Image 1 (tube, helix red, strand yellow):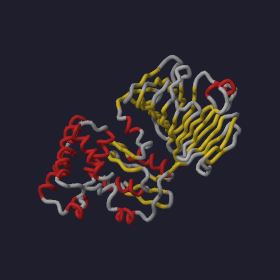
Image 2 (spheres, helix red, strand yellow):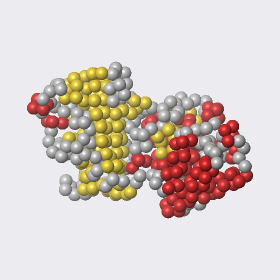
Image 3 (cartoon, one colour):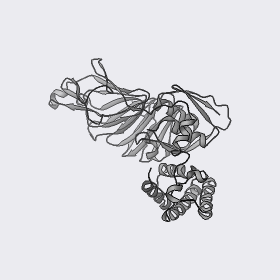
Image 4 (tube, one colour):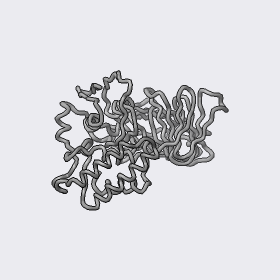
Length: 386
């Protein structure tokens, strides 16, 4: 984040128009100030006592928040004060998160690179194709349906024959991402799907042969569904079925999580609890709502949907998130083994953000700066001490 981007972010916070994810990101900058270490002294010179005092007050206000309403008030006041300081030419960097790169290098003897576009495609014939190694262009054809890898790495299906013939096309394909992988696909109906790490999506080669567009998901995916009122789009996942006509939503149904979360960004979706009767336990979500399936029961709450799809937008955004939850994300995205046994009665939670395309040490360093947790990296194993 450069100075101009930070100014825009702080301005939105001070006006009260920022999302929770943006507030968390901005707050991470505030919390990263660590004495003179957080100042760009070459560009701005030594800070005088008044500026230092005001920033101390800002930090104090942040720590005094006790609830959401207080959080918004104090944080907006703090952001407004920073805008005043920035107007005089003052600017600071994320000392605890992204600056002092040299220090981060010395903390860990080893490091792990972030994930990238990696996936495998299994055709109806059973043939398995590594999309990571496949060249751009046509990579397969199934009964007139072409499968193409675009220059940007997206998988695209194109039906090359008439609709009457396409109704005779049967069979399913599966795309799966390993740990440390992600991928984007455009389904035969035009629906776009982004797959997170360690996820799998199974779908028909052609939807025209079916009365409904039904797919199966394991892991996490973000959907932008192509509108087709005559063919409802359904996503089957752990213990639930989500039905839509055309909308944007995210589903998190990893097997190592104890809940299934469905978050709606646009349109509407209906969720059927598979543990209940066919006509029972149907829940309709509105934009900005998230359903949580736990212990065979569905609950709905208001959320910041942009924070839910941080992974799609290239970031890790945490808002009072537990260390164990963060480490599960780290394990999936960096393809590492985590050795962690929590003995604390009050495990730490974290608020902040960092690019998911940084090496793992950047994220671990941020966690260390904010707590007493310590990490060591041994090959592809991360050991946690608390």
